[in-house]
Amino acid sequence: MIEFKDVSLVYPNGTQGLKNINLKVNQGEFVVVVGLSGAGKSTLIRSMNRLVTPTDGELLIEGNNILNYNHRNLRKLRTRVGMIFQNYNLVRRSTVMRNVISGRLGHTGTVKSILNLFLKEEVSLAYQSLDRVNIAEKLYQRADQLSGGQQQRVAIARVLTQQPKIVLADEPVASLDPPTSHQVMKYLRKINKEDNITTIVNLHFIDMAMEYADRIVGMRSGEIVFDGPVSEVTEQTFEKIYGRKIREDDLVGGHDNE
Amino acid sequence: MNSETVVQGLTSTKEKLRITIILIAVIGMYIYTSRATESSILDFIDGWSGFQRIAVDLFPPNWSYAPLVGEKLAETIQMAIIATTVAALVSIPIFLLSAANLFPNAWIHMPVRLLMNILRTIPDILLAVIFVGIFGVGVFPGIMALFIFSLGILAKLMYETIEAIDMNPIDAIRAAGGNTMQVIWFAVLPQVLPQFVSFTLYVFEVNVRASVVLGFVGAGGIGLLLQQQVSFFNYPRVMTIIIIIFVAVVIIDYISNKIRERLV
Image 1 (cartoon, rainbow over the protein chains, first blue to last red):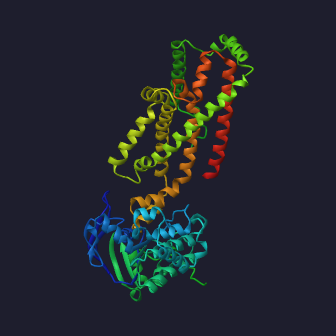
Image 2 (spheres, chains in turn purple, brown):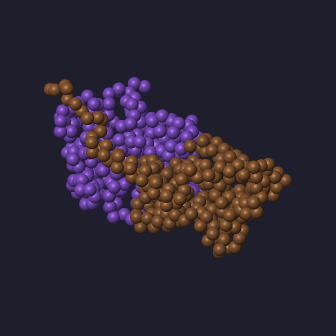
């Protein structure tokens, strides 16, 4: 379980990233965070693995306040919280396999990882993860030879290899075309269901949020302005979150017809 | 609107004045330095007989001297290989610590950079003189001089390369629980490895050329022969050495360039 208690974050330049956030996410939920760019979605997501550190409040993950974690605890936390990025963040010159096995780094000692001494089970886990997102045949290709959608699937496989309890996805489809976006969202949804991984996704496309989320959290200038199950969400809800009328470009369209 | 407006040229009067002043300053500087050093382009004409004399003296090269030159050339290349390899290995921790994106704390990267900047300001020939003073005439001081010289260049080129890498994969490895060493090994080094090899080859080329000069101050290699023969005015032998150095440097540069083209 993840619990934000009055969490605020002020960046060193004075920008208020988060303002008195109170939020509870249960194990296995699929939450989509929506809001305009600059609304604090990324900050919210990145504070859960401490890529940014809130300046006030308490953030509990599995009952422990992660805001006072030291280096060692932080590393442990990050093995349990996986992350998917907008730009996939693969090492482009390395092979797919090497990228995927790097999901094990938090579980592996420094010397062992540098000498490539990963356990047999870890290597086969990496392979299975690739297989689950249907890209196992690209095993030894260099990451930069793959398309955007394929790279994002490799990034999902990397997260799976980490065997996390929570997956954070920061605008995972913002760089992809509509069909590929749906494919990526489907894989995220699938691992959420199959492995009971709590999944928190930032999206700015309304239709996509509605299609995949259990629950929607709306953010506006660092505050949560809506929080509820998808069934309660209407167009008015989005207009309230966005503070303006819904437009064509708030929709990704291209409903998946594979 | 008046379409007959007359514009005075393409630049303002102020700009023209500025350019004129700069031009006068440059020419004035040239005239002053030329007078101060008592040398000018006219010296070419006065020195013409010297050109002819040395051209006659240098030919034909003395090829019977070539085997000894070959031996010393091998020594020069060996010096460059040892110095470059050791410098490449030693530079790794130095350039990593100098990269501000890996070690944002200025107390870490600034002192390391400062040390390297100081090393780089010392000319290689001066390093050689110092090491010959310490270790005596021979190959070892030459290797030491090349090593220090290479270290400074490599560290600078590499930390600048690292500061330009894609930081996204680094975020990803950190988010997966990787520590600094793992971030470096999995996300930084794969990105800079081609440049590292390329710069190392480049430094090797530079070292071969530099080691010619180092011989002049007793730091081993082919330069020692060159210096001896020049001081004996044995120009046919000098020519042999020059030709052999020239051919060797061209070949090494060519091979190294071909390899580097393939890398990046």
